[in-house]
Length: 338
Image (cartoon, rainbow, N blue to C red; front, side, top):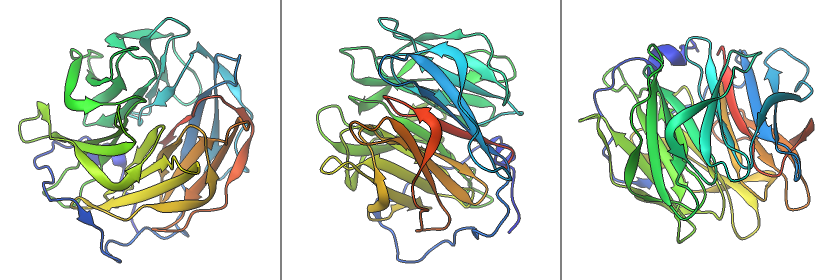
């Protein structure tokens, strides 16, 4: 199967947004890429240290390499979550909430080996940490407000100029944790994908889903509760190259990670448990080549970072811990060069 450059796909103008009612997915629909295809590129991970360690660490996993590299410090610190955007022109940005009472969202340019000086995202403040993605030539951010403010906010940054838009509130979207973002890959020549967001509700464990309304390119569509999807922590979202979405979250009853996939147009599968994957916080996802990669902090008392990947539409590899990587929160992932 030919591989398309996701940056080329996501840089195209978007004309249409999916508007179908949410229904269960059919048993068999779009086929997943073969697990035997070359696993190109590099996956990067960043995370806050363990309790008492506010440093942000990073490492990477090469497609042809023997495993994860040994962790290194980025030079940044945080009291909560971090984020990595998708790459644009061989560069991405790392974002984090400040340390202690500093609720400012900061960002750093990252080229795969070096993190730049931290810069403030204007007007962006959070008690948890941001989410990030790329659509077109803009980096999109979303985040929960400061302590006492459960509204979800968003902003975008134009890559060519480096300018940020003003912060805006996402209508009717409230969370006690933080959202996740992903751009669905095109479903046809007439469909150029869309920005998607999922989050846990602020007063319940229900997970909601929302898309940006690209008909007017100014607003978000109404939020939709996802059947059978509940969590007491963070939600993760990724967009496989074949189209659709993959979502993962912590099951509040036993801590197991569950997942669901959305096939174009807007058909979510029934939630399923990921074998052997348990967390106290919630997972993170990225896509590289034919694979969806996932990482997460362990169960209460286990601050190791674990990871696995989905090799086809339903099969996850056995979880394994990342050597030397430990956290009290949850990590963030992105991938280059696939």
